[in-house]
Amino acid sequence: MLKKTYLSSGIGYIILGVWVLFTFALIGWVFFASLSSSGEIFSDHMFEFRSGFHFENYVKAWKAQRVSVFFMNSLLYTLVSCTAIILIAAPAAYTFSRFRFPGSNLLQNMFAAALGIPVIMIIMPLFGLVSTVRLTNNRWMLMFLYTAMNVPFGIFYLLAFFRNLSFTYEEAAAIDGCSPVKTFWLIMFPLVQPGIITVSIFNFITIWNEYFMSLIFANRTAVRPVAVGLYNMIQSMRYTGDWGGMFASVVIVFLPTFVLYVLLSEKIIAGVTAGAIKG
Image (cartoon, rainbow, N blue to C red):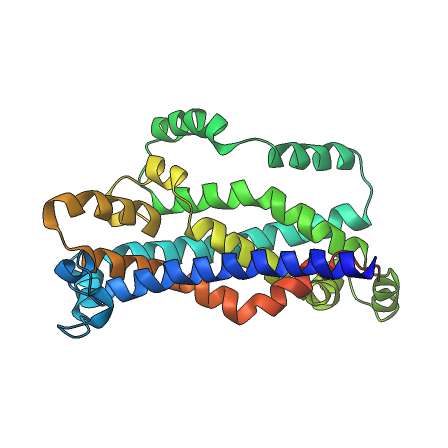
């Protein structure tokens, strides 16, 4: 029995190790390609850097390829949407976990149903509605859509955290004269910090990498996020041939989510596990 356990664990570690090596090899190749010239990328000596490191690829990508515009657009969309999601989902999850009122179960079921609706099924009715009010290529409309699409996930993720908190916190706060609203923001909200961080990270990655909705609602260059902007850059490579600049753009777009996950990976794990622990 012990041998089988070690054997299964060994096979699992081998598969995981191969997957990690493959992933790092791909990321490393893209990074080295971003520091090479277009000619070296298609040669057999790309990793030799005979012509030196081409850091100008990043400068060209940031300025000439307008990656700076796409980057700042995505940063705006992501930060505003993630903040709005938490400000809506956290009070809603707390209310569902602590109070019973007419229609509360119906509302929870509606949010649960919203989680199962693919975006592609509602994108055309949404586009027709937004076009009618002439709000396409509008930054605020895009942020509103990002927020609305991700609120159901935020509510149900945080619901488990609030349900695991003891009622003694509210009872002690009530004895001290705290109102329910003040109790939520000053006591209950900080207690679910691992869940807040985890939801924010998941939403950040989702919104930063979102492509389909932004392709439909933000087809003007000035309002494009990084996913759509990067796709258009790849399409233009057939005419410009600036492959070094393209891979530099990929690194710039990929870097925020990579750094965020590396720095906050422990917070993500803590948030995932904390929601399943009874308080």
